[in-house]
Length: 271
Image (cartoon, rainbow, N blue to C red; front, side, top):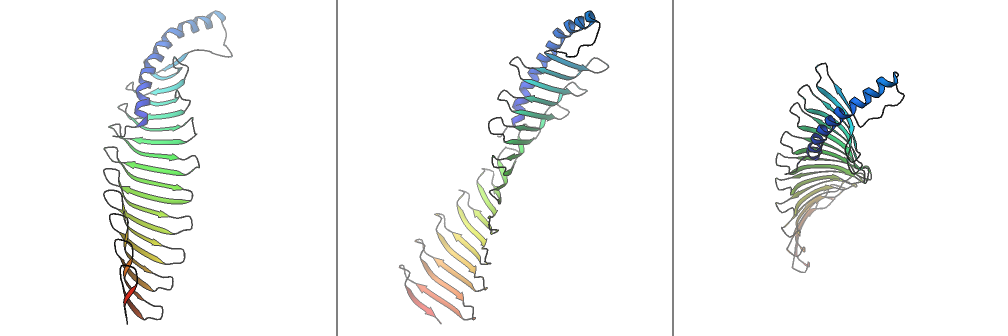
């Protein structure tokens, strides 16, 4: 199961929020005493932690640094649970996490310190990352959608100018792929339960259309297509990918049927 990234971060923040509240109690008294002694407002206030409370004295916000020096800001709901967290992670990555009224993180955004890749994630109530949006180092966007078990079922991206869509089964095996190549040529591919390509329908830039079927070993066995001028053809292949039957209609309208031996030599042609 794919647990959401921000659930792990949130667990750390819950611990840190307790530490921040403790630091606020220790640091608030010396700061107040110093302000009273000086009798004036300071141009710069330096502290380890700031706690913002409501009219009843309940903590609603905390700004502090962790013991190892990482800054963070947390905002609490009326129920006392964290709802918003803005912080710098130990690896230097900035992150924003949002939670629901039960304190469960449901959305988060971060930018990786190592490669600068941004990541936006939506989690369900069971801590499973259901949708993730990322940008690759080259700026290519990608969307991944997962089922309740955390299996990636939909992948949508646009790498190198070629948008693609992949639909997968519960085992995360691709079963259908749709892509538009950089030259504008679209194609649809079907995969079996092992992820092997079994069928493809494609349209070439010149207008030629082709439907190809493969066996379990990936060998072309059937090819049905039309040429740019509209002439249709059907070819049947053996397991060695040698055409054994050819059927087509010429541009002038004349049909033709050819039978071939195992070497690809014609043995019959009609009319």
